[in-house]
Amino acid sequence: MIDALVVGGGLAGAAVATHLAAAGRKVVVFERRHVPHDKVCGEFLSHEACTYLDTLGINLGSLGAVPISAVRIANRNTVTTMALPFPALSLSRGRLDEALLQRATAAGATVHHNTQVQTLTRTNSGCQVRLADDRVISAQTGFLATGKHDLRGWKRPAGLQNDLLAFKLHFQLDTSQAKALKGHVELGLFTGGYAGLSPIEGGRANLCLLVRRKRFTKIGHTWDNLLAAIREESPHLNERLNGATACSDRPLALARIPYGYIRRRAHGLFHLGDQAAVIPSFSGDGMSIALHSAALAAKYHLAGRDPNHFQRQLARDLKAQVLFATYLSQGLVRHPLQRLLTGLIRIAPTLITTTAARTRVPNWALARARKRGASLACGVKKVRSPSVSSCPGPLAV
Image (tube, rainbow, N blue to C red; front, side, top):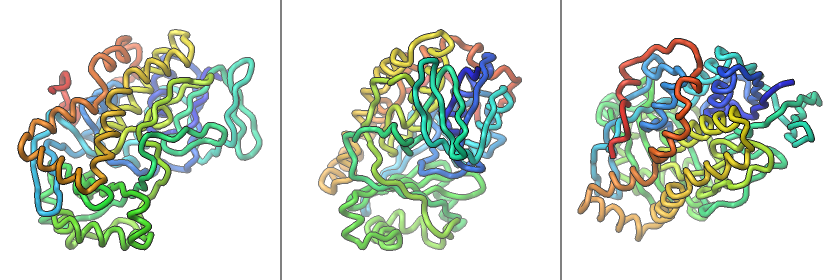
């Protein structure tokens, strides 16, 4: 019998499949897309994410990951630049997800691309999935890792901040603007939302933004109107996009994102990544949470522990930072609080360090998930790269 069914081939799904397959378990992954693809994501890899990916044998340098060392916050004509309190990288989700699925396959997992799971149900002996072609496949344990998309019958409840729409689009920046952005992630505030801009591999830049639904409706409910409004209200972002070429005709978009959601009960399955906890994008820790949940779930499953034990522990690991980030996000989309927050940052730049520390997976949680050390690794020789080694040691905050 199959030991584990993993629904979703993103970061969390591919990572848990790699951990389990490396431990000798029979794992099957179902990914609904034919090939790995870009997703609505800030594409920011914090220290914690770098560490987990290194454990999995992912060579971030060979993938073209771009070093990030500082953050800029722009509110109208006010721009504040500060060094990040930890080393970080930036890499497109399409490239990273593909590398992780290849890693899972190399570790022994079976990955089915272009396979739509219609239902996932619990059975007396474990769980089973029904596919779009009516095949039914059973396993001892199920892992739900569908990211921000809910599987039928497993819809997440509302979070604390549910009125935001998310958009993402890659740009090829003008040479001078790409040079000015190098090494930075930039956060631009505008009426009803905020936008993040960061360099990624291939000389491109990732624009990922959130806007309140009522603001989007007010400006005409179109992407072109939204981008025009943002450029008018944020001179800094407008300058960055001068002479830029969009890499696709339309942005990726998501609605009904339950920011602040934290799952505390498993209902017989291991819920990973955004199916377990949804942190606002500005924190840059979404990918770390996905990878942390995968490592912790693998540890609990291999130890024979119940999914409910895992889910409660993961909620304890993440509760404080998810709630803090969500409350801060609620302020970032409201103009009066935008002015207050940027004013405080100018007066006390150490607030960035404090905020970064309070929105990260804590070191004690990371240590617990990685306690089994090499036994959780993929078992294949790793090749380290300069970019990976730029994320060394404990979190320096």
